[in-house]
Length: 467
Image (cartoon, rainbow, N blue to C red; front, side):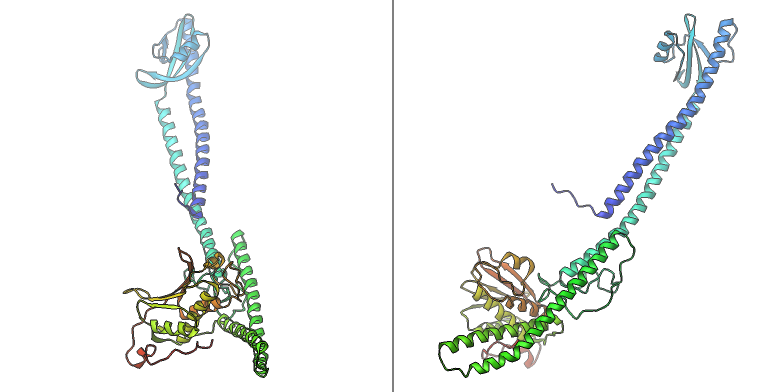
């Protein structure tokens, strides 16, 4: 059976309380023993003084009136009687006529001379003293427990805030800092798909400002400062990578355009076809890099309009020119950006054909009152574990059996889905094959031509929109 989880706050509070109770118990026992030894010792001293007087009077045959002495008393405790029989003196707490007394006894010839002193008052005083000790210990333990809980709450709150910032950094928000009091709280904003943003980097332009360190100079503050420093370093490296990618793509675009134009002047034949094919692939790579750099900048905005989802997806699939089955279980109206949704669907379909296995099936569905979905399914080896856990990574296509490529298609699809506010999830089907599931927010159809803008039957499929 799994043990219930206990928070650090309660662990610290319970530990402090347990230590306090242990210290209070030890101190209570020591104080009780010291006071009892002193109080009982005083009673024993009085009883022994009376015993000495009683023995002197017994030896001279004088009356022992005024002294609580008894010769061979039946109420004397048996251990004390045995001690006296051996010729020794002793004292012991016992009873006499149902009342607690302190007995002191000594041999007197063949008899046992015993005297008794009332012990009830002393016993009640000790009991009251023990009650006072116990009450003080409980009050002290309660006060220490509350103080420990308060201090633990402060430590726990700082650790929770640090963990929340770490989760935001993991989700791609590299602007998050523990010392940034103006930043959003732990639950601010929906989290992105695995892998963060299109490039796993920040959502927008960097805020070049020194972050205020967390309050205090203890170990928690040191951890928070180390996390802020790590986030700043990671953000700088990712921004340098993004700037490099954008610069390279911009520098390559112009000469590539010229080379493509020059290649058209080559004589017809197989060499020209091979050169043009490679140049077009390099041109597509450059355009993909430019698109990713725009998505990384965080300045992209969707141009939303209502469309019929089924018709829009069917056009996007047909425009790829690939043998893909489209199943439209429902054709809900959604408010989206046609160009960006075209890009997402086309990239998912091309990826399924390039790295998966036939048949490739695209299904559009919308349960009554539910969320419209688009599923792209192939029957190949499925997505690798790395992609399922961390999302698409640019320039990483190390999936065994899923072919080769530069790994930007799914990265762009994730970035465009983020701009549109669409949920994009990558899974593997139980019976084999990769599944990409898009979840779109529903939209009520608007009156007028705009509502049917995306569903006119006379619209013919065209080529995919440029990125």
